[in-house]
Length: 145
Image 1 (spheres, rainbow, N blue to C red):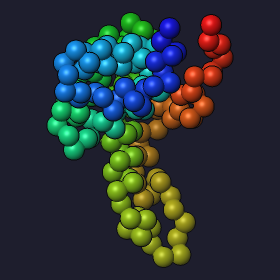
Image 2 (image 1 turned 30 degrees about the vertical axis):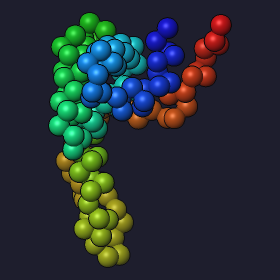
Image 3 (image 1 turned 180 degrees about the vertical axis):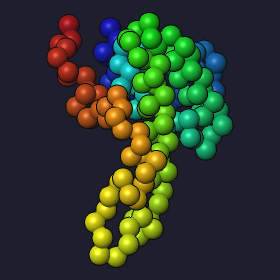
């Protein structure tokens, strides 16, 4: 069952560019399966890898996401648009976290995402869910037999 693979999603993602071709193929297949069944958790894990400093990791993540996106609407209505929203949101969040807070707000002002980082604000409303750690765990309503 795929819910067992969800538990090791971070470990699978870390092997996305494994040197052994057979291992890499199994990892890519498992990640594709997880994207189809648990798109929020898998996209949240894979989308940042598109920005990896490792060309192999970046290309592998991009390939897996593109392959899923091509058939995402078969799995759930609006699935393709959801992929785009995750990719955009992660890209904006990476950019946002790279800016020192002092550059974003002036003295004696409250932080406003709409004012200080409008490109991230414009992504609303989105179908992006940031999964809690609990939703990535093995104990999520399933009992091992």
